[in-house]
Picture: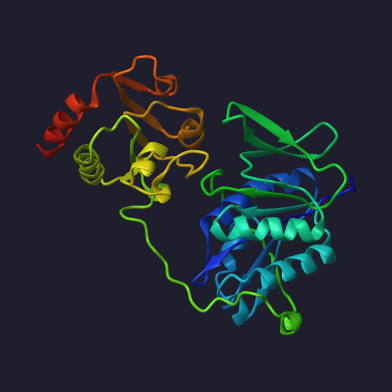
Length: 326
């Protein structure tokens, strides 16, 4: 390693504001950059020149900003070309990208151009005894935390799912470097976005709720699922699910908790008829108070629960709704 190693974080923007996942990554990367005596830099590709102060608030030393109408919507050719140019110019030790819908397309494109590795859905970073950055990812159905290094190629690239790291303010007096976007004039993308239609998920977003009610594969009827919706509403919370509920068509992946869905950290988690597979536990293990209701006393969810209710949810749920209604 060199005497210092810099970290570059791609911070996705929407409507002039950075997405929360970018700020979460900056919060975590700030400590890593300090440990490696390097700088922490944020890269932004956007169509408007505002919202950058938030990046300094969460630890960025410098913001590399590409501002152009071409960045209003995601176009792989434009975004990857700018990222590759910047990486080849500043040569960061690591390049980290949020695993959003856009980031999951963007990251592998950039890694392929740079001929480097890409660790997907990192859950932690650490520095080993030799001073190398180690990327920790879940493996074998989240039963094992695998440690990944990219020993020969640079930068080490990885993606991080929203909700993985805590937000931590660390204000810096940073600077903004404006990227030259003139080379975009010579790129002819094969696909040109004509517009963007956002489909907002029903109810409160899981990652914003202090109370999350999760229905598992043991939920038997659509009527029971609607009762869970009412419970989450009465608790001013959000309604989540596991994969079987999505397969039944009662909910969608925007509400799924686990390695294939979202990572949540609510103050209160209520799992109803959730067995507690390792895939699901990975997505909710950092919740505050965990309440589990399951008729199987050996259900794995009880291993992480603070309050364990061994009972048929069909007996508990109506009584719970009645009590909350007063």
